[in-house]
Image: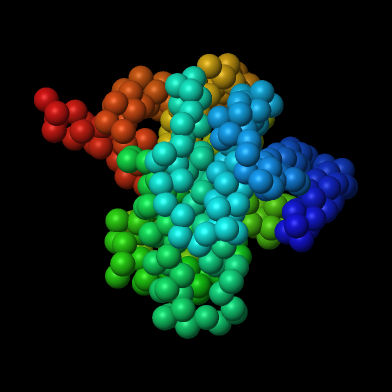
Amino acid sequence: MKNRTVLKLFGIIAPIVTWIFAAIWPGRKAHIAAVECANKCKIMALVQNLESYMDPEGKTTLESIVERCYKLGSFPALWAVEGVGKDLAEWHMARNQNPTRMLNDAVLDPKWDGAWLMLHAGIGLGFAKYYIEALKSGANDAEVRAAVRKIVDLCRNNSRPGYYGAAIESLGLVSRFLKNAAFCRQVHKALVDYAPDSVGFFWRGAGRCLYFHPINFAPGFLYPCRAIKMCEKEAPNAELLQTMLSGVAWPLTIVNMTHPEVMEWALENHDDYFSGSPGFFNGVVSTVVMRYDTTPDDPLIARFMNHKPDPKNRTLCGLWNSKIKGSLETALKTIYPVLKKHHRLDEVFQYQSLPALAHELERETA
């Protein structure tokens, strides 16, 4: 409850401060910063929710809760469903620290099939919060290792086939948000020893956190690339740097789909944002694949892809057509159907060549 109260206050104060800043610092840069800040606060409020999505006795069916989330509208439904998963995990953990098959045995009408990805991201969030919050500052490697093993096992034991990656990715978000970069390195060591297949998912989540981290909410002298600079400092190696950059691009894209001018700003300032980084555009593609699976009928996806920047800015128009519209159209036509067919949609929660993965999956079954 304390965390919910803090979030509520932050969600009120942060946008106000940022809009004031935008007013006294005129120009497009300040306006974009204010829009981003307000959008982040809205999304965090949906995930955390000021009241739990679960009723105290747990009598309300998961399907009825998910249905209520979708009634909020296709855009907010994604994060509301993630919040349901988090609250579901917390509800179970308060009664049994070793729940199993939480989502394996859950039943949803096929029309809510798109909820599974974010429900898994949500339970991973709940499991990670439970154990990471309990660790004292300066926890030693053995203590961190024990917590990580519990979180990994919970995510594995409660995830449907092909969804584990969506759950364990949240460990990266929680670790970086509640602790610091040094703690993330401790978690990294524990994962390398116990669950090496989870390392990429973890660092993707850590990158996602840096976009949402409180110190990156409001504009500053390093805006708009502060989260990118933090990735460069914190990534253990070059490959995981791309993974973290993918994590930053994921929320930048999905949170601001209603305001494509934010992505315009990223494209116009590409030297600061990604400098040709494959990780950044992997994040853009991955998040829209996830968005499409969750709400395939949402017209916002097509509106975002087909957005037309100022025609006088030919460079920006070219970047949008090639890097956004072209990449996303290809992904939704050729990558998403393959991942869906092979039950591998959680692969979008880590950095890799999605076209290569899709090709390999099809080749294996040819």
